[in-house]
Image 1 (tube, rainbow, N blue to C red):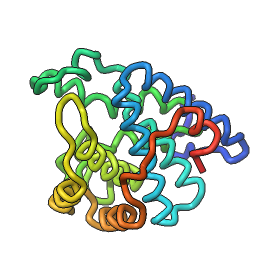
Image 2 (image 1 turned 90 degrees about the vertical axis):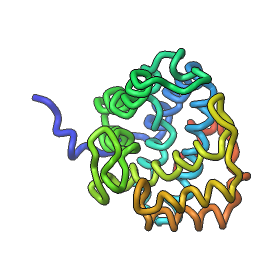
Image 3 (image 1 turned 180 degrees about the horizontal axis):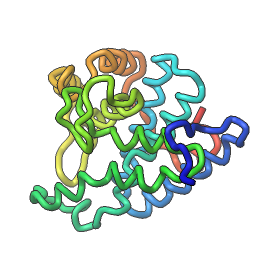
Length: 220
């Protein structure tokens, strides 16, 4: 009989180091696949962790957020390099393939004991608050809380990071752009908390972390 995934959460009787080791191993695979994606995942992890603490999430939920944030793009392991590293605009078919990565992430992680909620949070991090996102066009608070947090952190980092596709926006321009997405693409209330996080600790102080630090120190 298939397990009842909907009630499966991190098992506190299992050493949290095991979950950290699993995440660190996947992170090494991401680094081997694409360095830009790896560094992006680390920054999103940092933003999400700070936001989760600002929201005073309980320890287990914060832990799930941290793991989900750092692995939110694990599904890109299944996206061809020619698409991930393409310097020009993606065609419709290539964009369709990129949009499969949340589902691929879910499929990779869902069967790991205790990871179902993490996998679900990752699966929905490209949903939009107005219901126009993917893969399920969820709307408002029907989108998991952790997904909504990751969506904000992911969007901000994509705006402020230099990639083969774009030059980074300045901090002020990125904040202005985020504000324009409030209540549409992104959760308005959570966005306010995120802005407070950026005010309290400069985003310029978000440092890259190695998979070794994730394994030992960086997850609550």
